[in-house]
Amino acid sequence: MNLKAFSGIQRTKEFIGKSVKKQNPNVVLDMFRENSNYKTFGIKDTSEISDRVIKKLLEKGYSWNTIDSFADRGRAVDLNLLNPITGKLMIGSSSGTAINVLYGINTVGIGTDGGGSVLAPAVGLNLYSALLSGAGIKGKTIKKSTDFIEFTPGVGVITQDFSQLEKVCEIFLTEPQEVIKSCCVMELDSENCEKLKKDYVIDILETKVKPYKRDEMMEFLKNIFKRYSAFIYLEKDVEVCGLGDSVFGVMGEKASEIQKSSNKGFLKVLNMLDSSAITIPTGDIGSAIVVVVPKGKMYLKSLLEIAKALSEDKRPKLYREYFLNYPLKDIDNREFKIWREDD
Image (tube, rainbow, N blue to C red):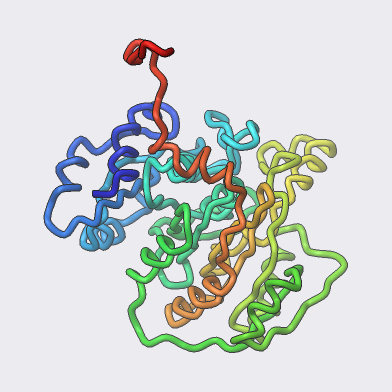
């Protein structure tokens, strides 16, 4: 029995009406069915996540626990939820899905990403995440971003640790895989560059001015993928300052400045390029190493291998104990407290 997963199911009721929209009433039964590995998953409340994706998780023994709340109409911030770490508005739109993983309510969260809606919430909560658009794991509806770029939502995964992320992504490994041996690297520290050099040839890209607008970002990455099949960079201080929401950002010059200071980088366009990506949290708030590969199912295994080389968990012990192990903490409810004579 996985005590943490089972306790997470029990404590889900504390989050209903907040980050949880509904709980599967049969989840406890599911956990005791044959072949269950006592891991749970939640899904964002959207029809863009196909039954095929859910079925694959069920077939691997994961139990469906929650339907998760999300930001209104896919906004980049969620006006109904706060980031439990910073106290600011939660990054959307797979906001509830990310929070439920942070607190251990679910082992795995499945969300959708149009312009960063899986990767950004995960980075904002210092969780691991994967976008699987490049592997063909996508929704079905063509949509248009606030800056009028057409896209189909990609499906992504959020977990507390890399090993669980790897297990879920491997479910979607299908055809023969292409081995990637060289990478383009930008703004990565020397320690992580040395880790990569053990198995990969790396070219360090130096740029004084990074693109900010989505069309500029997309052109920048297209040029990189003409030469490389892997791009590794740093998303830093995402939503630590500012408010990265385009609905807010159109409200004049000051609002635009505040939006830009939210510091969201390439994660805003990775799905729009049909890329796959993995985020690896650093020890700094709202920061992650991001490994990106272009469109193609044949790149998923190499994506996982490159990310694994960089996957060391450097998050503070207090963070892990306070959030990730939440289901294992005793609750001091005075109504039921047993008083000892020496108290």
